[in-house]
Image 1 (cartoon, rainbow, N blue to C red):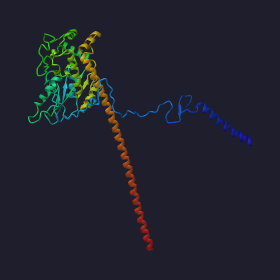
Image 2: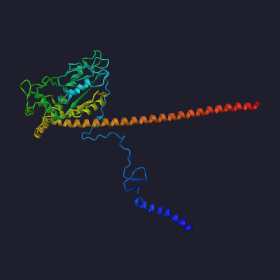
Image 3: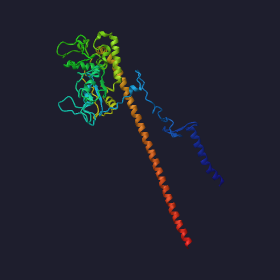
Length: 424
């Protein structure tokens, strides 16, 4: 009997020893996980050995970093206009040729959610964009006020003309310095813009009625010689277009965004070519930086996003990116492209600056949105906790009241019973 019991006891003991030896072989000492033949892990902690524990991002709530070759500051990237459409604020659109300004201008008058939408009638190019409750325009652009300061007026013309034009429509007893003017514009890749302007001029466009006013006067014929002697430049070849030294297509974006008074307007003899170029570029960059908003033709959706974030105005339908332009259909050789870049050297530098600034502003706006969303969620969680705590407190108060009521009822019953006992 004892031998049989010993044999039965020996079986489980040997089994346990075999399992322990096998376990030490499969999972040696010091291992944090046990790996089996199928490659799966059996962790001792709640995190698998081959999966890194996800730690919270230390920069999640950190200030936005804006590394840039142009050393943009937070103030440069922060663009939010408390636009008072019912008050005296005015958006001024500086429309540079062949930058997609016509499409954007139509968005401004036909595609914005407004309490009082612009009145655009069929067959008329201009729309009436009045403020709610006032017969006064909040938008200065081709499709609202027309070319009131001249055809494709530049920064020099607009800043000297717009206040006077808008103030003429004010009531006589209203002060003339109450308006806030917010300048906006669009820029485009210089080579694409240049080719697009060439194709446009080749089809017969001239812009001959442009005033080019600077320091109170237009340029003289000697200061701005014509590139052609006929009515227009229809059929001009690209070589002829590039060969005209007074062609305003050259560095057009830089010139139209700069303060031309700083360089003697169109008088090229007032200073050296190098000094003139330096002043024009620095002025254009400075004005672009301080504009309320600018967009890039190549980034329509981001342009829409940045405008909406800046002004708090929202478009009805999304912008569409159209890449199949006439300029896109023009094939030029390497040497021709290099020549165009040389003719537009200032525009090339300005566009590099503008693209970097635009990109940084878009990223900064997205960063702000993420922070606002996180703060909104924090506030929501805080309110939920407060509501839950309030509900728990209310439940405890109700239970306490019920208990007190039960005690009062019990006390009353006890007193009645005691009085009955005494009576008995």
